[in-house]
Length: 303
Image: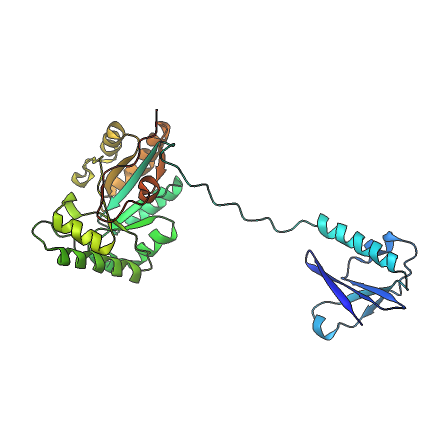
């Protein structure tokens, strides 16, 4: 007996046709729908034992005789019911990418972690629905791998701040490249995704470092706003210093190793938003410059 299958919502309707008879099998609960289609439907209305390939569904069969047009009518009614049955809502589309050449953007960056203060910072950022960029140190990553995994899981960007936070001066390119590679290995081992963003400790730049960045595919990310939070001036001072110095496209240097910085973050985000800034990650701000480039800020939208 030839048969055709149509999937309607969560149920499968099977219509089997022969030269002399037509039958339709519907799930329990749809019998009333079928009976209302036409008074020509005289239900045998028997519950059939489940077929071998349908052991999870008991079925109600209605004999429709040889009237093929009635089969089509019944099928149309079932199709309408299926169309009217609400389905699981589609997931919301991902947010549109931010164009910082048009939107006034600022990127918050956090250096030297992870530390015991990092979970509190993640909570503060989550409370304001802000994504940031973390430049982590390999030795600290190995001490606190769960924090790195949490940074990644929260949707933040993880950048490279060397394995041991050494000075960059008087170091050969291959040694510096080894520091970068070791930090990336530690990030990956902790469950993070290494990026191509590198922040040199102390902001030091040398020709050898540029060579190391090119060799490892890294972009040097500096900053143009530094509230000196490393001196722990207190949350209010940090907020005031950033807000007074920030400009469209600014990259803000902060450190999640200080509790005062963590405490300042919610008020800082609120103040920046009040001035019309959109908080973004470094990749959203600067795009994809070539390896060996030193970046201090992002684009400034036209006035």
